[in-house]
Image 1 (cartoon, one colour):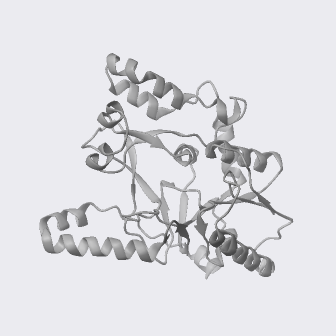
Image 2 (cartoon, helix red, strand yellow; image 1 turned 90 degrees about the vertical axis):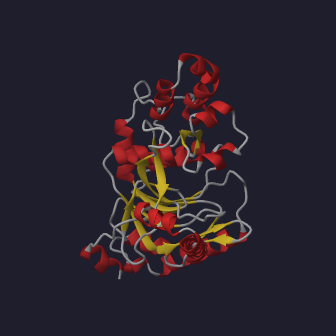
Image 3 (cartoon, one colour; image 1 turned 60 degrees about the vertical axis):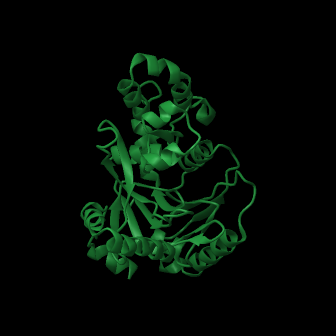
Length: 322
């Protein structure tokens, strides 16, 4: 088994906690190589220096295919990692399996999402809502995640590459937005939309685009969104920049793969504090308790509509990872 460990290095440095916890999980893996269900014949750390980040990730994905790696584990350069992370991810036979981490700032949502529709803003747009309640011991599925702690097997990139065509692959979000606007509005924001469609900085159109910055409907309330320094057309139609991984995970779903989440792999997200599961639950529960006292009706509505994940019972995985 040939394994690539991918961490972007566009900033040319790593936080101390990222570096230290990565060394711990790497050392733990080396100590337990014989306990894996396969033999690792090649283990390589890759740190592409390319910027922006979609180009960085595309370079790494191309190297995985070109250099014959069987699987890859992706990190971000602002994380902390549990000691058993690498070993546990590699133990899992699923083509895609991710640990968990959380937003850097309030409300500290978990970066695991389900796709849904925001009927209040526009029924034409698909958007992602964070999974607020999830099993703590059992696996569960998500529709979109980050790239901060995830194993992706070679077969995933191969399948997307087979699907790819420069001429027919279109940013669906851009086209939905164009269709929803009248001609006058389209003309005014056309330069912005065309810029989003331009992916020459990624591969010059010569190779598959696994990752691409784009646009996506907002996933926060309109009042908060309006405070951002964005033009009125983006605000009016609930448009915001989408990170490069949204494009990737949509292709993953189109290719027929599930995104498996392992909640026993809990990573930190470094800011002035480390955002993790404990901080999220503390913040979330405090807010719910206050709403329950101040506005019981709203509290009941929240409980009825909250995004929850169902546990996945898999005896084979449980035996492997126990």
